[in-house]
Amino acid sequence: MKFSDIPARESVKRQLKEMAASGRVPHALLIHGQSGGGKFMLARVFAQLLHCEHPGADGEPCEVCAQCQRHRSGSQIDTLMVFPVVKDEKHRAPVSDDYLEEFREFMRLSPYMDFDRWASSFDKKNAQPQIYVSESEALERRLAVSASTARYKIVLFWLPEKMNEAAANKLLKLLEEPAPDTVFIMVSNNASAILPTILSRCRPIEVLRLDDASVASVLEERLAMDSADALAVAHVALGDVNVALRSADATSVSRLFFDMFVSLMRLAYQRDVKALRQWSAELTALGRETEIKFYDYCQRLIRENFMFRFGVPAITYLNRQEQQFSQRFARFITERNAEAIIRHLGEASRDIAGNANGNIVNFDFAVKMIILIKNY
Image (cartoon, rainbow, N blue to C red; front, side):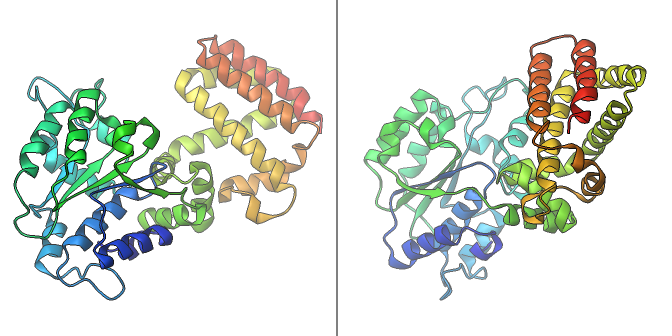
């Protein structure tokens, strides 16, 4: 992998390249920022660059030397992986090496490091992966041996905020007295949750929110999505590629929500109370979690239809199907009713989440829409 394979992040790439070229590499580097932004890919390329025997003039690893080939195959013995794992009957004192093959496959399938996907891969479904003190103890033993094939022994540390207190205190000793050939590259989604004494010993590099166009380009490349649809999904994902990929995968759910939204608006406009009661029952039958997601979807579509009226494509994020509907529907969403509709949607979502009767909540909102849709 090269830096050029990672979208955007030019400022961070430049900093990492300059570190490697100058040889002024901090013993502990913290790459932090929003999840799903490609931080771990940056860390992996940086580790490969530090080991590369013939880095290019452009600051990229050569990809052909023995070290680069070892990184590609996952057999670079001076690169240690640390990541959250689960304690179970088989692993009473778990360490990352117990799950190394599974983690390599996870990195291949989910290069933007979807933590929810990693957590769901364990047999013990209710457990939250974390980093235990057994990890820090094993790391201490492994770092006592000098690098054998390269200049640096590198620790790629995913989600240090998942360390329990004992593990964090043990790791602190390693950071306070680092071996001269050891480099920690930590990647965090939530730096504020890391032990302050550990934070103070790291050089931080913040990775800002990924722009919508870059997220959309990932969707287009990986899923062959239409550019307009990809941009609409990217906008809702707020810079998190993993959220965007999950949203794009849920095409059948999105289609269901769209159909339910269109049906609601048409029946409310027609003032068909009997049909709205049936609509409410159908929504309730989908289950509480789906109802909440539906109301979230409706709030987005109301906002987008309000913006659609301004005729500025750059500020609207609708897929083709939604856009075709909005060409006729947007005129009904104005300053007079948009805020009230969104408020009632939020109240319905809150009531459903609070275990209120779905039939009552959904029908109540549907009847309110009869008045709201006419008040434009």
